[in-house]
Amino acid sequence: MSTPGARSHRVRWAAPLAVFAASLGVLWYHAAPGVTFHDSGEFALAAASAGIPHAPGAPSWIMAASAFYRLILVNDATRATNLFSAFCGAITLALLYALCASTVRRMFPTAFLVPTRRRPVQRPGLPHILRIRRVVAVN
Image (cartoon, rainbow, N blue to C red; front, side, top):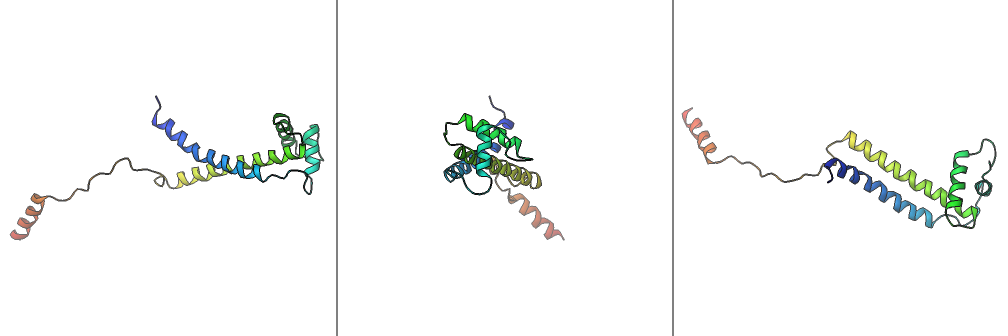
């Protein structure tokens, strides 16, 4: 049995996951198939050999790209590192969306409230109107 808090937690992470999936699809489709300009060839070679491209390098990115290259079945190291960059970009966009949504939720707590049920508008009834007339007539 799910509690209301657990459902709210699932709903809060549905939108960032959708942002992740959509951005991953777009970035994956548009990733470069080979070597581009600047240091992409150097980083692809470093990821394939698990080495350091140049000082100071990017050791955490290289280790993660090397693991990504070995996990997915792509023969080309340059394509694998470009796909890994797309994956990192999609994670960044999802986390950025979650951070912005959390900030807006804290700044404007009533902005995301969904009304559960409409309550009828209470209108003054006939006795209330008669009471007003009596008061006016006495004065």
